[in-house]
Image 1 (cartoon, rainbow, N blue to C red):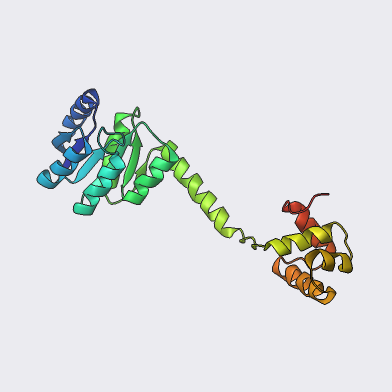
Image 2: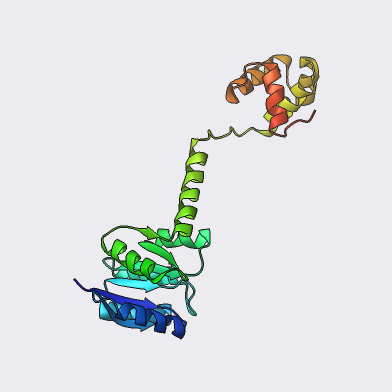
Length: 215
């Protein structure tokens, strides 16, 4: 089965090189070439390729924007990004746009041909450097999700924490907070429960650790 391709890159020399590489592959058919995102969208609608090989830096719009437009209008088409830029934000934006692969320029020809085979088989492909960045971002997101959210303290609660850390007595804290001594005790109990600090010593350590109070 022949795979029909559309190349999108604004560098004629790059297009020429890709054209020669693809011409040597009996299972690949090059339908056309585009220098801009607008041209890529137009040719995609006219030629109906199976796969668009897309650079990310184009003179009119980014290749990621063009990829999103193509996939919105022709969701059955696959887009493989072919770029020299492996910036994390670009890769993340490309993934959100729905691309099926991200390969770096400068790699071996065999990698490009292999990437085409992989994405046409319905799988994702990333150059090793790109894939490592994606996995690192994913691991970081998992780490953040596993960390319990810190409770948000009101200014009065932070004030009370500072007073506790300073070793103030209940009457002093009541005067500073303009509360009764009984209200101070109530606030202290609620605060201990809120930040899970069952003792005054732990309240002090929490205040210092979070930068609310200093030694």
